[in-house]
Image 1 (spheres, helix red, strand yellow):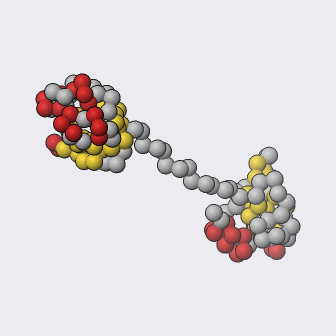
Image 2: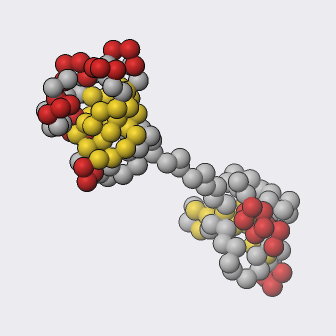
Image 3: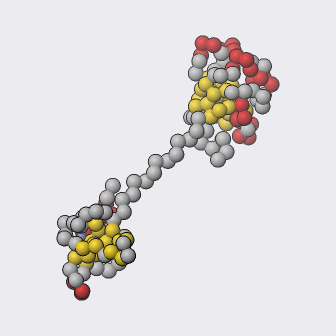
Length: 148
Ligand SMILES: [Zn+2]
């Protein structure tokens, strides 16, 4: 990800001024270590406009400075929250032509709809509940669909 995408609104700290414009570098010693919020992107994306937090100790009281990305330490983007996924295994009620597939939570003998079921163990693992197949309990399918 380039530093530009999604940068506006993120916090950053000025860690050097080697790459920034000469007018910014001229105040380098007084700007180093300051933190602020990126409020804009300048010069075809090469430079961030950062609004500094410490209003009392800034050169000429100027809060907004153009700083090259390579002179900033930008807070990392937090990873998106992992989707909360519950997987259900298939349980069967009835036999033969009367068999119906239900959704069952792991280590449970009762389906979501409350039916007594028996799992379909195949070599130690169980089939996942598949709402698309025929003879699926409509109540379990709906409950799985609306599960948080
Ligand atoms: Zn069911």
